[in-house]
Amino acid sequence: MSKVRFLGLDVHADTISVAVAEPNGEVRSYGVIPNRLEAIRRMVKKLGPRGELRACYEAGPTGYVLYWQLSSLGVRCEVIAPTLIPVKAGDRVKTDRRDAERLARSYRAGDLTAVWVPDADHEALRDLMRAREDARQDQLRARHRLGKFLLRHGQRPPESVKKNWTQKYMQWIHSQVHFDQPALEATLLDYVHEVDHAVERIQRLEKAIDEAVQAAPPAMQAVIEALQALRGVAQITAVSIVSELGSLSRFSNPRQLMGYSGLVSSERSSGNRIQRGSITKTGNAHLRRVIVEAAWAYQFRPWIGGYLLKRQQGLDQVIKDIAWKAQGRLHTRYKKLAARGKNKPQIVTAIGRELLGFIWAIAVQTEFKHQSKAA
Image 1 (cartoon, rainbow, N blue to C red):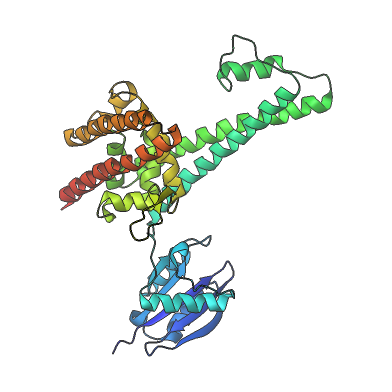
Image 2 (cartoon, rainbow, N blue to C red):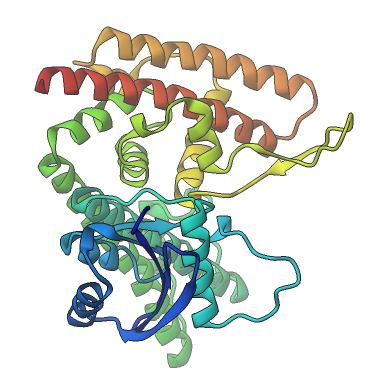
């Protein structure tokens, strides 16, 4: 008879509500403990042999610290996808104790779906990439504030300045835009300072990304370089994909990766009636964003040159062939969807979904080759 105990943990910043699903079917509340390593160690010691404990908690803002703590104590732990936890219809009572008991009960029944937990290298790189993404969003907001401020006060760049936010555009603002009122001048200086600061911040983060890639494990570096053979996938995009997904060989086929990205169509079918809707948008939103951005490159005819040609230098011919096949297939797909009257966002979303298949193929090929060399 199995003696395994299943622990459901409802984790907060300061406390953890613990429930235990016993082997005989009983599910009971253990209580609330502080979210500290000492308290977790005492709980593990009290509940019995570490090899007979199985713990789980929902993915959330507390990250994976608890996972690493339990793993270091010899307790098998899994982090659960919150959106895939079964919920009874009509259940309107939600407390920390009930949430912990529900986790323990569902975990024992095998009804929960675990998420991928990154190792230290992937998590560090992922946090750095997300910091850059935050910086880009802050830069966009800062530019919008400055642009709208200038628009409100009738400031227009000369005809020689063709595009906004170029070096000429910023020189025009610094040298020619001034106000007589001290309040307006102070406002202008503050908005301009924020725009300049955002540029410096992004440059600093991108330099840190270059250094992090150079210091990354060889297997990770190999996948990042190989993915850049694809059109629309430069270093920032490749690093984002690897940091968000880790090892792509953990997906047994590209359809699993497509489903993970949330780029597959939703479906409501019954009997002979099949109805498909918009994309599910489940899974990793950061991955979905960079894939859709990369997919815009395939509206143009297949071509290799410039930066793409430089990125492909030194790569295996197999990787180059996959990348060239992606250009031909995805561009043809783009034209066919456009001829059917689909709008561009729909087309690019469909292209991004298929692009994931080529990303999977290149990454798996590279990972397999690197594993063979290591062996």
